[in-house]
Length: 150
Length: 150
DNA sequence: TATTGTTATACTCTATAACTATA
DNA sequence: TATAGTTATAGAGTATAACAATA
Image (cartoon, rainbow over all chains, first blue to last red; front, side, top):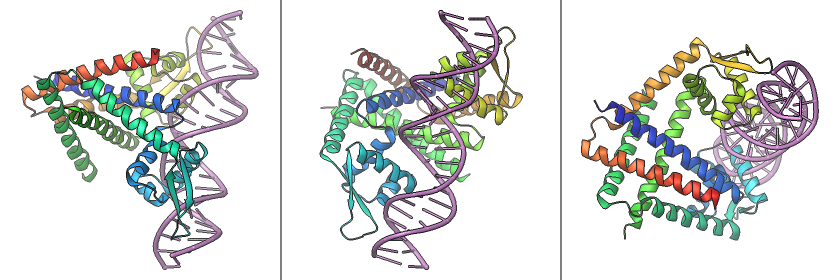
């Protein structure tokens, strides 16, 4: 009977999600961002200047919602909204200098967090964690896909 | 140089938090609940009938917010709001039959999910995951505590 | 005087629907 | 006719502040 230990493992994962979420929300608030806005900023960081349509699809929210997020990011100086050179219906959202610096900082901080979390973990145990996490992720994806179809 | 693998592990944990959150949000919507309301329902399940003050402290939100959450849960039939027997300023929030049945269902579903995620995972790998998760959680708590004080 | 919960007000994220400008 | 983005409207979660009733 290992059922109890399964429950403990899931509880730990759930607790981790809560802690990570709270920590991120707080840290982002300190620099004038929210988790939703930062998702948009990450897309711009990796894809470069994008239309709002593209952003809406990338972060899977409505066009209306992107309008609001971009409004807020423009107002706080993280992005600009400029006319699209070839399509006068569209805008092109671009990271400002401040936006670029900020997302680079976030990237570095995430890298540091990873290092602090796993730094002196023994290699054997660390391998178990990485492989276990990958398995759990695969199963979760399968379960979610199945439940959406069922 | 294991830094890349640290990043992978953190990325996996972050992806897990997103997947779990989306899956939960969708499943709760199907039964007429939200994650915020369900946090309150879980407190009632474990603590029994409670004042709104107690609930506000337990889920760490403002008194105003609890008023809104309880309003919504009363309207959808998961809880009742009754006068407190000994303190006429306070109300006592109590799970209805429907609320009790629902939270028991959620508990069972979570148990099933744990089983499906970890069922046929080899004992050795599973041990690595559980111990690794516990270590990561401890470190995360330490880091967050330190950053809040610093 | 202190506490419980409410009303008042405001901000963020989210959605759908109607509409404008452009393709 | 189709598409990009806006305005209009609505609902959920969150907060602070002022206020009522009661302790």
